[in-house]
Image (cartoon, rainbow over all chains, first blue to last red):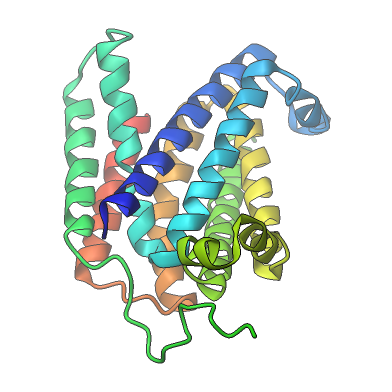
Length: 138
Length: 126
């Protein structure tokens, strides 16, 4: 893992956290959509917060695709779950939410999961030279 | 009724997001290291290789399904169950699917990590 690869993982975390937050904030302003009127979901994308969330999640998709091109899914997913810890810490610091014991336990659990997986290899060794390189084109 | 609807939404979100992740991972592995491809052939070639890959397009469909499922769920009132349950469960299902379909070496370290993150996310997202 090079520093540049850690930057891509960081980009995944930031884009996903900001995108989800923006989306969740926007959907709360749109209000409840019942299952019977599911077509209203398509109208929800005109809300600016929902639209911003979608743009951020496109950035997430680009970073995520890039990471998956050189790393295992079972490495990238847990490694980028640190975003939940960041969100919890942000809500504690910025929104002055109460720090319950359950929250500390959650932060500890996710962080130890990330610590464990990032100490291991990021990709499964593949037999044969061509399995990961796209060097077959003429 | 509400309970059944919620658990159906959770199952749908978990399954479609896992399928999307597995397909995206397969597409990107077949395409190869995008950084190297970019240096060799330019950004246009990278984008073309990605958006024309059948697995990538199918992955997008599954991701869109889970995205709209979550959007719908977020607008319901029982968010405190749907979001932690669906996001945390997908860490375990993805580890399982990565081992089964992508033949990744999901060793004890990765299982432990997936389970810890699953438990932690469930606690944090509540």
